Amino acid sequence: MVLIRCDRCDKSIEIDRAVVGLKVECPHCGDINVLRAVAGESGTPDRAAQAGLPPARGPEVDVLVLRPAFFRSRPVAALLVFAATLGGLVGGVLLWATPLGWASLAVAGAGCVVLAVWKVLCLGSGIRITTKRVIDVEGLLSKKTSEVLHTDIKNIRVTQTFWNRVMGVGTIVISSAAENEDAVELAGTPHPERAKQTIDLYRPL
Ligand SMILES: [Zn+2]
Image 1 (cartoon, rainbow, N blue to C red):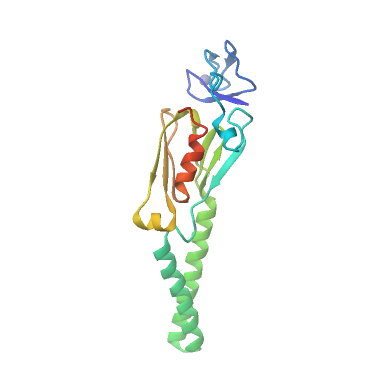
Image 2 (cartoon, rainbow, N blue to C red; image 1 turned 135 degrees about the horizontal axis):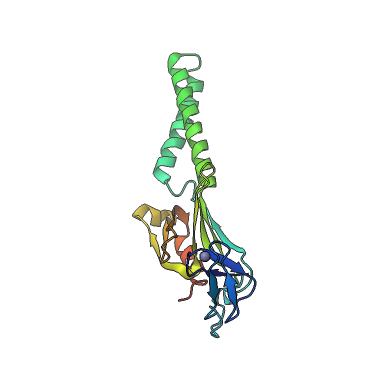
């Protein structure tokens, strides 16, 4: 499968095989697109395949799924919540059946809720890197997703604070040159540089 972009409505169209001169009717707006050049047929080697990853020219498959690191993306906050939960439990046992004991158990309970919600948020968000595009998964509750085709990527930016660097995480922002595509962004990504290098293998550079 090959993805091309409609030159009238800018939406992506899936075709089986890209051949120069092929006329493709856009399923979104009905415009006839004529393929003038076929990407990846200029004799350049498939860098992704050379690196042992799924080939860029084959069918679209997942290459990498990134989720925010649960602990490493916010180590200080995580430690505080863990400490409060543990302290609440210990206090609750030591001061059993006293007002202070109940207060301690309430703190422990709140800590557990925070950790659970946090874990669910981490599991629900992320980005999927396929051989053709980067897809932003916005969360379990919201259905909004955005995507950027590798061929449209304008820039990939990795930013890391000092603590991010210590913990090996960072924020990755993938901006698109196409008007109708939003940037895809993920904070707290483990190994952000490796993710950037992986995407670079599928981009025309
Ligand atoms: Zn169209």
